[in-house]
Image 1 (tube, one colour):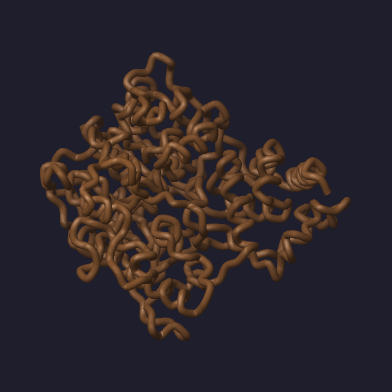
Image 2 (image 1 turned 90 degrees about the vertical axis):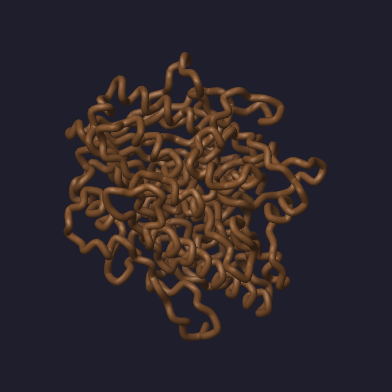
Length: 562
C-alpha cells in the first residue's frame, strides 16, 4: 500500500473515531494575544505574538494562573524543529480550551478554585518561561527566548484589564517546564501583587536533585547513566566545567534569577541558581512541590538510562541507577523542603508530595498513606486545617519489593508507578506517534479525545511518517483525555498492552475496512495504557548538556533545559 493510500485510510479511520467521541465539556477559556506594541518581550520563538487563555471568574479576588510545559530546545537543530510547532509559534494555537485541574470551573472536582479567574499561558519560547532575550541574534539562532518577559507582559495586561491587582489570593501552577517557570516566576509575581497572597504548586519541576556524597561534588547533579554504569562519576556538564568550558547565557535567564541566590555563589558557579535544588532556599513565596522520586524524564531522557535493557547485566545497572536517582531526589527534598531550609521566613511551611513512582508527573490516582495530592494542595493553600500540618509533607518510603530484594525501586501500588524493565519496538512506535501528536498540538491534559482526533485528522501525513495507526492514535488521545500529560511525552510514553491491542502492524487502517464496535473505537477498547519512561529526548532541566567541542563556551540554554 502506498504512503498516500495509507494516509487516506488513516484519515478515514480517525474521522470514524471522531464521529464516535463526544466532547465531555465545551471550551470555556478564550485566547487573548498580546498586542504587537508589547515591549519588552511578547514574542514566541519565531516572533509571532504570545498570549494567554482566560475565563472570567465569579470571585474577583481569586486567580489561578497556569504555565504550560513542553520541554525546551538546546541546539539550533532542536530549536529549528520546534519553531514551526505550537511550542515555537502562535500561528496554530487553538482559540479556546477547556479549563481543567486547578483551572476547572466544576466545583465538585475543583471546590476551592472553581470560582477563580482562570488563566492558562501557552508555551512557545522553549526557555522554561525564564528567558529575557527579546533581541534575536546569531548567538540565539535568530530566535526569541523571552518567556519571563512574556509572563510579565501578561500579568500587566491582567492587572490593567481583569482586576488582578485587586486580587487577594493567587495560585501559580505549571507542569514540567511550566513547573520550573512557576517556581522561578512566583517571587516576581508576589512582588508585583503586594496585597495578595501568592503561592505556587509546581508539578514535576524539581530539576534537579543534588549528587550523593559518593558521586559528584556540590553543586552538581548526579552522574548520568553512561558514567554510572561504568563505575565512574560524571556527566556532560560536569565534565565540561572541569575542562574549563564557560557557560553562555543564550536565554538571558540570569536576568530573571534571584539576586539573593546569585550572591550566595561565586561568579563561576552562578549557574547553580538555575537548579531548583539550590534556588529553593532563596524563593520567598510559599511552595507546594509535587514531584515523584524517580522522575522518568530525568532518568531516561535526560540521563539516557535505557528504557529497554538488552540483557540482565544492563537491567541490573538500570535498576541500580533508578535506585540511586531516587536516593538523590529524596535527599535533596529532605534537606530543603522537609526541614524548611529557607533564607526568608514564610507565613507557614512549604509542602511536598513525593510518591515512589517512576513517572514524569504524579497521576491523580496515586496516594501516599491514603492521601491524594489535590485535596492537600487545596487545604494547604487556604490553610483550612482539614489536614494536620504534617500531612502537607509526604515523602513515600519503601522497602525492597518481592523479586527485587537487592534494590529499592518504585513501590507505590498504583500501576502507573511501577518499573517493569521491558520495552521494544512496539513501544518505540507508540512513543513516536505520541510525540508527533504532541508536537502537532493535538494533546491536551484531560482534553476531549474528540478534539484530539480532529487535530490528528488535520495532520495525517505527519502521523503516517511517525508510524501512527488508528489504534495508537485512539489510545494516545484517550490517554491524554484521562491524564495530566504536561503537554509533552518527553521521558515517558503511553505503554500499550499489545496482547490486548494485537500487533499494530496489523491495524485496521491498513485494510479496506475497520471492524465496527459499539463504542466506535475498533478492537482496541480493551487496551491498557499507563505512564512509563521512554527513549528519545536529550532534553533535561538541570546541569547536563551536550558539549560544543569546537568552542570554549557552552550555550547556557543547554544547561537549563528540560
